[in-house]
Structures are given as C-alpha cells and as structure tokens.
Length: 409
Ligand SMILES: [Zn+2]
Image (tube, rainbow, N blue to C red):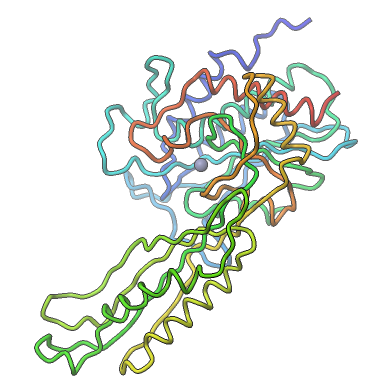
C-alpha cells in the first residue's frame, strides 16, 4: 500500500529545482552553504544520514582567497553535503554526484532574471538550471523515491552535492580527502548530457607563463629586453612543441591547446619588461602533464637563450588528469539500460572534452563513472540558460532505474 505522492511527481521536481536555482551560488565567491543546508534537509527528510562539511577553498596546499559576497562584502559561507542511505553491505555502494555552484550570469544581458527560476513553456530558466541544479534535483528525487518504495538496498546509496566545482573541482578534491566514501563501488555524475552517456573526459592543464625583460625608451630599444617579443616567439613554438607526437584517443580524439590570455606592456613608446600568457591544454589518456610542462619550459629556455636581461616563470594553475573508464562497467551498462527503459533511446557511451568531478573521483577514489544528466550541455554557462522540465523528470526516473539495477533485486 503506497498512497504517499511520489517524489518523482513533476510538482516535487519543480519545487526542488526552483528552490535550488534561487540560491545564487555564483562562484566566485560560491556561498554554497545555504544551498547545502537545503539539500541536507531534503535528504534528511527521507532518512538519509547526512554530513555537511564546511569548505574553505583549499586545494593542493594552496588556499584560495576567502570568499566574499559581492553584494554584502561579507564572507560567504561555503559548504558541501553528503548523504547516505544505508544498505545491507552485500554490494558496493553507488554515489550520485553533483555540484551546487554556478558560473556568473556573464556580461551578456539575460532576457529573464537568472535567479528567479521562471517557467515558460515547460522550460525552467536560470543560471545553473542546466549546469547542474537540474541534475541535483533529479538525484534527490530519485533517492527519495527509492526510500519511499521501502525495498531493502543491498549496498549504500550516497548523494553528494559539492561546492567549488566551476573553478577546477576543488570542492570534490577536498571531499575526496575525507573518510566518507568507504564501500563505494561506482559513481554517476549528473552533469548535463541530454541523458546521453559519457565514460571518458579530457584532462585540463593550465599553465601561466611569465617572461620578464628590461624596460627602456622605445627610441632606443637596444638598451632594453622586450618581454612581449620573447613571448610572441614562445607562443608560436609551443603548440607543435608541446603536443607534437601525441596520439589521438579512440573516444576523445586529439588533445588541444588554447592560448587564452596575454598581458604585457604599459605604453606604445616603452619597451615592455613583463608579459604573461595563459595556456589551456585539454589532454587525452597517455599524455603526461609533467612532460607537457617540461616541453614548454624547454622552449622557453631556447627562446630566452641569447636574449640578455630576460627571465621567466611557469606556474600550473589547474592540473586535472584525463579520465577514461571502460564502456562495459556495471554502472555504465546499468545507465545504458536505464536510459533505454525510460526514453526508448539506444545510447552508446562516448566522451566529453571538458572535465567534471570524475577527474577527482575516478583517480583518487578508484571508482568507475558514468556522466548522465538532464539538460543540454550547450546551454551551460550561456545567457538564458534553461532546462526542459520533462527531461528533469526523465533523469530522475533514469537514476531510479540505475539504483534498482545496482543496489536492489
Ligand atoms: Zn557542471
């Protein structure tokens, strides 16, 4: 006898998603704590053990600047939340994972308020609607539905809602150092995929390169050392030098390089004594980030050789390894069956060129993963971001089916 309404009902999913979007968790500064408390209450309501972890923006021993709310100037509290529905322990656990922070609304004007969670024609608009509060809402609803069904779980079901994903998955990196994940066997990452499946993602390696020179009057440049000229030479050499000889990955294709920013010089008639550029490598399995850095440094040394009064500095800003899981792991095959059962689609697992929290959970926790979530990934980080509510409901049903196959029956 089950008479209580299902958490998968459209009204409940809309409530969850609307409330989540209305927390303006723009990163920086993030300020995810109220949203994490909201998720905790939701999880607690259907019997999850929960833990809310304050997050201070720490990563790899480097502490980020303290988060400040741009509106109030006050420190914005940050937190992450992990919930667990206990199973019998016969099977390894399953984690559904998402992040609570969103990117800023951006410079392009929106036609709707990015934090009002307006619904028009079956679409909910808002920053984070697609990336990825829809995924978080669907995960909460799926876990609540499983709890409502009341059938015993043969392994633990965990729900993870992290902070600080959009700036290099630093929240997940901090979480992975906590003793929270024992007994876990696999992870589903609910990033927007239009309910397609991905088992591989490119790595990200960001280098900041600074060349220093010596300033002089532009009328007598022979007395100076032009940092911009040296940087220009370096940047023409780096693509071939750093990526030459790498092999394409069967799923992810070729590695790429974007030279993203460059800054240097003070005036047209002054020899510039400093120039900084940032490089964004997207890498594939088999590439070693240390080797990429070594090659960049070797080119830099070659460029500066013979240029008097020059120096340089190379710093890694983001270093996330590429991830590739087999397409036939239990969680990937369960996800393929779940998508087929809910949508009728035959989906084959592919790869994505951007990184998700899989770049932490797979190498650090040793878990196979699949990325599958509601929302069109092309709308992520765009003005007028939205998600189709019907797809949020489908995603919740997909997650229930994955949980059934992995942890029940
Ligand atoms: Zn995301």
